Length: 239
Image 1 (cartoon, helix red, strand yellow):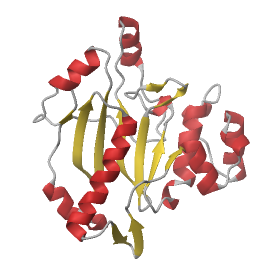
Image 2 (image 1 turned 180 degrees about the vertical axis):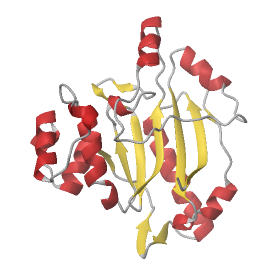
Image 3 (image 1 turned 90 degrees about the horizontal axis):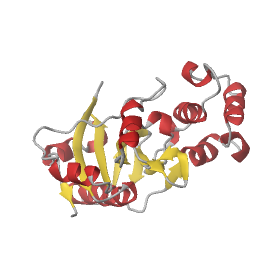
Image 4 (image 1 turned 135 degrees about the vertical axis):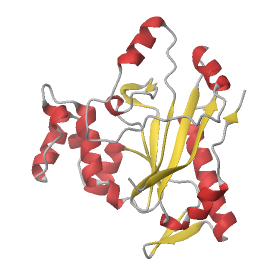
């Protein structure tokens, strides 16, 4: 795997929306500092890094980049129809029993959208089935407070609001929640042993919000090798 982690941090008392703001500022600022402008060339294409960047759900991305209708992205039946129309096979875990909407949505997104996302875009609100450590959205528990950042047709960052169970029942549910499909890569964060986790633990144990993020890139790609050399794991704490 050519990916390597350039930056990973945890932020107590915050959430994934704040983290998207920080991510935009971080990457655009680094580009301006290192390259002299908020854009860069990658594979002959100019990538504009000036914020704000679009924030799309997987459903919205499928409509924008793959031409699916709102009806198709709204249900398992519609997603299965989209698989059939394009001659694609849905993941076995998604259709082993009752079709699993979240797994179908994630698999179709990965098949049809990723390569088309050249300019920076946040893909937000990932299905709960592929986001075991992320907090569920209070407005729609099928999805989580998680995003992935895509630039140049590839994933650059993964982040989410940390699940912070407030009761023993919630903690048991958290312990048993796990991905049920191989259609997505695992994104469970691994904290560097050099980072103090005490503020994060305090936030989680007391039911407060916290979030985590990692930024990755392919070795030598996007003229960002020098960025990696300037970065260490960072802890941001807003008490």
